[in-house]
Image 1 (tube, helix red, strand yellow):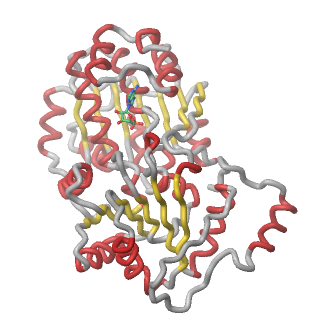
Image 2 (tube, helix red, strand yellow; image 1 turned 45 degrees about the vertical axis):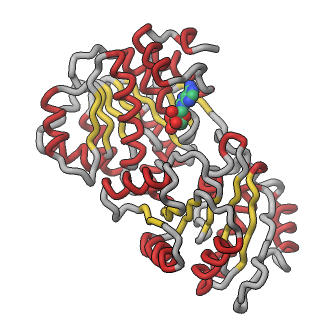
Image 3 (cartoon, helix red, strand yellow; image 1 turned 30 degrees about the vertical axis):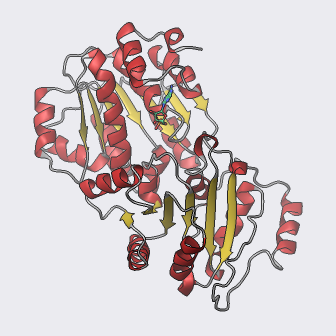
Length: 404
Ligand code: AMP
């Protein structure tokens, strides 16, 4: 299947060629004809599958370039919104549409000005969009196509009340496209309430099959996680581009401090950082000046960086699906990748949920010569209980099991 077979007009095909894309990804192949047909679409797909082009290309074909806000994309994070805007701007070079963003955390004036001049496609985070509506800078009454990107994430981040307010401002007659990495019951409820006879597309998580990643568990006392992180980096010389995940912003900062003291260039990326700080950090990480980026799950979805050699789960994620999302950042495109998970005894329940989800036990490793204090090692003695539970419950969850 080629882009030219999907019904896109010549200007958009030029844009696609200019982007260097030759063949559509599976989600593009499926979504583009449906959107062009005017259908509502639900896409179960995560970042990395090519979903941005899957909705942006056909949406731009459906509306004229007149500077009237007819396409609205709502996204949970600034990073993601910015990536969508950059893609839209690139395609608009060929089509003549005007594309702008309304992101929180940056001055509002330029956004007001852009909207005044006229925008065909607006990418927005929910809070800032409502702010612009209140200032009478954004008029949503002529929106024809609404894209809700990463709906599950918007729910997780508590944005749904804002999104509901936005929905109320839109014309009832419109085309709605919703994307979500998971189809939790809450997401399905939203789909049923807000979409009309939607076509459903399921795309398996792209990128890295979990088997291609070297996964290891490092049991360690909570108080020694920082030391272990530094010692591991010293012992293994191959931590080229490392993404570290922590549970909280505070912990992200603490890891950065410890690494910096040990002479490792690291920066934290979380929601307290300004937009500019986040962009700068990403840029430095991408071009290799920064070896370690420490992030919380909230901001991690927008991190689309090639060549990540290591993912370190400094804290075990409390949502098991986040484990798969986190480690999938490494070993892209056939490269090798390593995912280390630090686990303290307090985190055994979360670990258990992850191992149920991925349907395998993550092997335990230890760093030779590290002065471990007393620590609990998982799997020893837990196994029997777990096997029994599985036997009773059958295969509760497979690789694509859902827990939310
Ligand atoms: P997305 O899932 O939209 O964030 O896209 C993930 C990455 O894949 C981005 O870096 C895109 O530029 C890239 N991409 C999207 N569609 C294609 C395509 N058809 N061919 C090659 N690369 C693509």
